[in-house]
Image 1 (tube, rainbow, N blue to C red):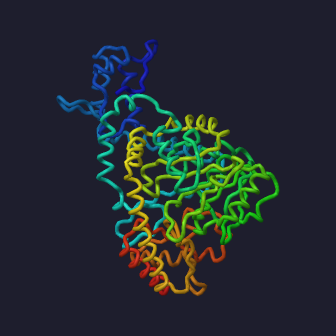
Image 2 (image 1 turned 30 degrees about the vertical axis):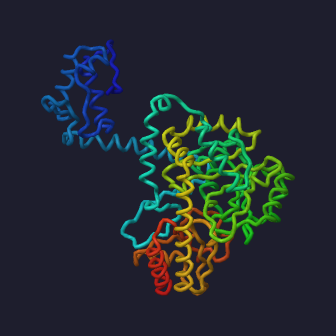
Image 3 (image 1 turned 120 degrees about the vertical axis):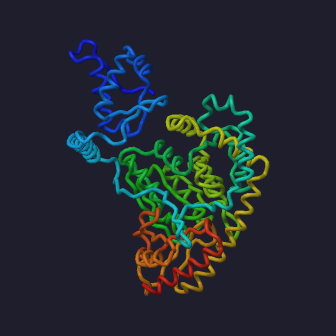
Length: 492
């Protein structure tokens, strides 16, 4: 371990005094934490080009003052309790640091800085059921086969782990993805169009890098995902919210002025859950071609359709090279995997890969290699079929329980995906009141205003809307949880 210490041979202070003073400052500033080891005298002497005796003299001075202590045959450490004489000095340094932090936080932020968190929410194990959005079922994770694949991949990992890989992603995994997109999404794409990213958020970030600057007009569904809205704002975008109806984004209300980018979730609109029908998809593509706009198609819940066949993706219908398709393995394997993928128009791909290389120089090789083998040997398809069957059963329990315990509520988005939007009846208390009452009964729910949604003021009865994620819960938890939510509504 090397310490940020420098000495001046021309100083009037002795060498050991300079070392002691700088070590003392590191301890006071908590850059050397209580109990932390300090370098051996020989090592620090070698670093500073001074004799070992000089460092020993500095350590002895700090030991006598109560800053350091020595354990024989182990080493020298920072005292866990500092001398009483430091009590008056430490707050002054803390105040200085606090003031610097305060000034930094007062600098203008490049976006609204609303202070809302992302999708991470700590688990609440004491709850009977937590209908939080965005989690997968840990019991469904293919742990046994995943462990086997990781071990197999490590067998030949030495060379691959010692070099940077293509920032676009592992070629064999990208090829496997293109092979799946034809039958599942109706897409014909080459491996040269596929770019691997660290989940949806990095994919959106990359698109923002491509298109968004100060005052760039960006259209978003209203309501929509706040993580995308805030990210576009951070690049200086001018967000234009366009309302969603029962068919998705209302194409008739898209602006006539020039727009650079449109963000949509056509397969299972977030958060309303509606599906964009074919005629609306074609109308959106026609508008984009005339406006010269690109469309970011976020297919976050596309793997789960319970009623009817999935519609072809916007990208598969695109004849003008204006759709960027974004998907992820977060819903099918787990958000902790952090592997997603984009299908990019050919004329954008080179620039997109360049930007991606500036972000991270490529995703972790081992996870990509294991995922490629998971897809290649058919395990992913088997896993996905099991999940689809299990999630459909969960959906059925959820809808039945809602009809029984919240008979006047409207349910949207139950034909697909991993969440539903529930609008409580007019006579019910607000969603915030229900959240509090349900929590006291051991159930977690998210009012729309407390969810990852944004622009929800465009919805009727937005203050009575609950966003319920359910695919991470057991059928028993869902049934009991909805019954308790109904009780919370009646109590409110």
